Length: 279
Image 1 (cartoon, rainbow, N blue to C red):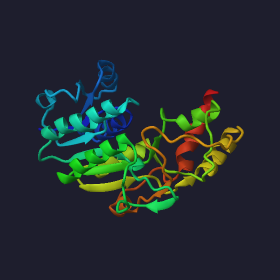
Image 2: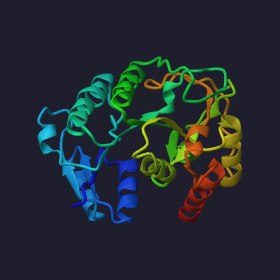
Image 3: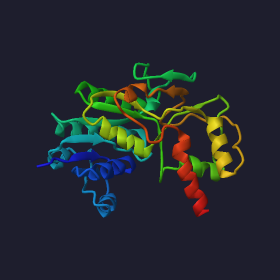
Image 4: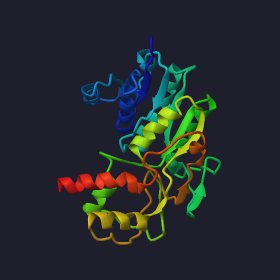
């Protein structure tokens, strides 16, 4: 009997991972918060279970699995809900996953460096926001039990085109502090989860080309034929705070991980074409 890979929080990335695994005839099960999400996944032939991961009865509902992937999202909710998900919810899933691989999808926002320096997995990670502190504790729980933590840079791809939308809606402001952007295409992150499913440790998942914000938007504006956004200070992000660094992916690549979209130019070219075709 083939046990499924259980994807807790089977949203944007979880769905990509599920489809990737199913294409290889592997069993999957998505855990989602709403019945609407469950129905949406099952329309794509992805088996799914609607459940509240913060409910103490969750361990009784979860099946035996070949691996667990925790990619839950707080859906832009407040700190209290974030803590419920990444503390209480994570504990419930960890209780059900003893003895099998466990992957937590985390964020490179936990690196709080501000001078544009290169950072890798050995660099200091001292979160400066309440959400960051909660997420770092979640990482430590997973790593302490021999699991895998993937720190992902900013995710983009089909259905994740917020930078293009923001530009076209005149909502983008370029930071005057020469800020670096680190990104990863959604399909590359899904591939990374599969690649590191049974490889424990901490890994940065980011593309090969951190890019200055003004250079990124300059390229995007040229290809979309729109003017460059104004340069204006912005307040720190409520959950991520302010940081400015370049993410190194050398450790992940040294273990055989490869990128289909090594820079934003490969990743955004098809997204730009889609916008041009529909405009």
